[in-house]
Length: 226
Image 1 (cartoon, rainbow, N blue to C red):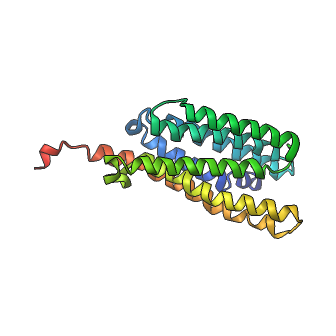
Image 2: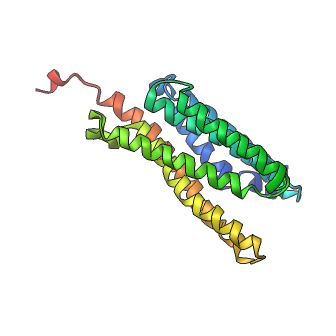
Image 3: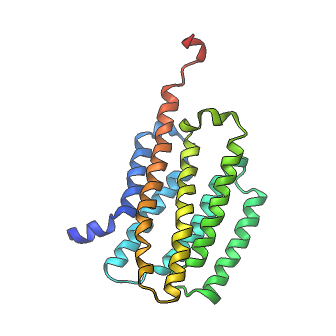
């Protein structure tokens, strides 16, 4: 593998989840099985980014992969958030939201956006739904005692990562869809913003994982501190 190809494969979108995965690996004994869903998410993001970057290096159309990645991310992240809220893997709300989304996803491919074009419709809708679920989590968090030390909560940081990413991506995808519809070249430049949001997302996930180190480190019985 030549150096140029290697650098292209491990761009920011593959490098950042790789860094978060290394943080996970270093703290694995402290995290245990509490964040297996995050572990799988990081691995899939590394593989997805690596494959699509490889295809992009050789000018192979990789946009169809983004259709399926959006479906995966919607099903997976919404499941993670709702699990943290309800403690159930497949709640009624999860089934309703993702059944509707999957039907729209299929309709978008068949009637609205070509499979080999960018899926701005489903990406925007997914971002909106995930943003609402993140806000719902924050609302539920405000009602718990955990809010008193939210800054040391791993879940708070991880879900905040999805919240920030979704909030920005909604605007980016919406503007991109508008610009490309009217053939405005500046529409492609808007995607540069996504670099910073992707970097921010995985930095926040890494911070969330590092909170497990603090939790274990400060898990001294309160009576011993008196």
